[in-house]
Each structure stands twice: as structure tokens, then as C-alpha cells.
Amino acid sequence: MKRLLVATLFSLGIVIQPATSQPSPSEMTVHFIEVGQALSALVEFSCGAMLIDAGSQDDASDRQLISYLNDFFKSRPDLNRTLEEVLITHNHIDHTNSLQHVVETFTVKRYIDDGFTKGSGTSRTNWLRTQVADHKVSVQIREIDDDEITGLPDKNGLTDDFIDPFHCATVDPQVRILSGRLTTNPGWSQADFANLNNHSLVTRIDFGAASFLFMGDMELPASDLLIDYYSGTARKILDADVLQVSHHGSKNGTSQALVDAVTPKIAVVPVGHWSDGRNPKKLFSTYAYGHPNQGALELLEAGMERERGIRLT
Image (cartoon, rainbow, N blue to C red):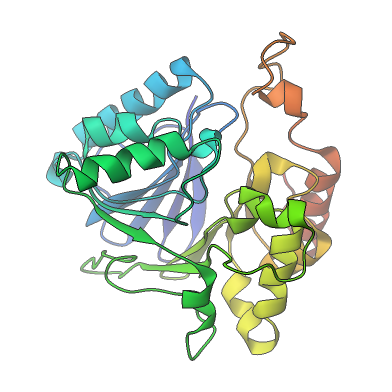
């Protein structure tokens, strides 16, 4: 069963199956696609679509992702099987595994990542760079590092027509990147700085009164740095209605400080079925990692109940 989150100009709601027709100009739909212990989210507007991460746990979930996107484009023939952009939060395999399949199957205009060329998922991102260099695909590539964001005159995140190519008629979406690849160690341990999770691109999308925050797999050292940077009056940029919970609900992806800053109404944890990977040889699985962590869920539940009067179910 596919679960989507639908954001309209005035409210948020949850539906159980994909939209089958073009949405109203005043509607945005985020499809959190079932890809197991991985992440892929399709963001749909009336004037275009983008994909945040192209992860899949295994061959079966890779086929499921492509099938889902095929069905989506059948329902939206106006989009001509085109993704305006694909944004990879970080180069781990559970966020990049299906990238090549996506690029070979659909038209992708723009591609954004953090620029790393080493890591468990970089064979896919390096493949794309090679294809572009050899003129085999016409995808525009952009790498985002944190200096580009912190060098801005204000603390509203990084946006331009490449990051945000959407200009819908009734409601103009706003896509911003709040954090990028760190080029210098801010004082972390060498292990934390080498951890690609801590270089995740954090993306905020506003659509009318609705807001989404995509955290990738950012762990606590990086989320603490994010909260410190967006302090004071800038803290509002982290306050969002829907939170993609970082690192698949791991205990090192959610903190009290983060929940207090975001105050989400809805929290989405991208994991597979709890029993996926009970075979001890299958380490890349929800069961093997023990996601989501009970403590992280309790933090989210308490924060959502306190701030919004809504319980996490």
C-alpha cells in the first residue's frame, strides 16, 4: 500500500492511494514511495515534479519504484515523463540505488547532490557524471556545499531557478536547500566528519501555508550545527508541518532540540516492513538496523502532541 501526503494551500491531509488525475493548481502532493530500508519521495505540483532521493533496498524495490513512477506519469501525461530535478540528499546506496534506472527510464532535466565522489552510493552518482561528460545524457548537474549557503546575506536557505524551477500559476512553490556538504571540519570527531550522513542536503519546500522538511540521513552532530546556524529569528526556517524523519528513525537522527525546532504535525519515517531482513545474511534491512528507534518515536510523539495536539499513529 502506498501512502502519500497531500498538501493544499490551506491544509494537510493523508490519502491512501496515488492521485489519478492532474492536481488542482492549489494542491501539492508528496509521494513517499515504498522502497524498503531506503528513501525516495516524489514531489508533485500542477506544473511539474521532482524526486528527492532515488533509493531502493534491493532489486524488487527498485522495480517497484520504477513501476510507481511509470504509473504516476500515466496519470500525468502533461508532464511528458519528465522530472524537473532529482535531488540526492547524500551518496549512500539506500538513497542512490535506483538513480541510474530513473535516468535511463525518464527525462531528468536537473540533478543536485553534495558533490562527494566516494562512498557506498557513489557508483550511481559517478555513473551519471560520466554519462554527462560523455554527452550521453543531457542532465544539468549542480553540487551544493555549505559555504554557498552560509555565505548568503540572510539565513533563508539557498534557492534559485535551478533549485526551484517551479512556477505554478495559482500557488508558487518555494524550494530551498538549508544545508550542504561541509568543506571544513566544524570541530567534530574525524569519524563524524567522514560520515556522509552528516553532509546530507536538507531541503525545505513551502506551498502556500504548508511546509515540508526533508532531512536525508543527517545525524545529531550535523543537526545540532543546523539548529545553531538557524538560531534566533532565523529559527522559523526549520519550523515545518511535515518532517521526513532523519536516518530512518534511528536514535542518532532525532533529538529533542530538533523536534522543538521543527514542531511537525506529521512525521514520516522511511523504513521497510519490520521483518524485512530477518535472514541474518541480509544486513541492509529494517530488521537488521532496528529502525525505527523507540526513543526517537517517543520524542516525536511527545513533541507533536505538545505542539500541535496531534498524536503520532
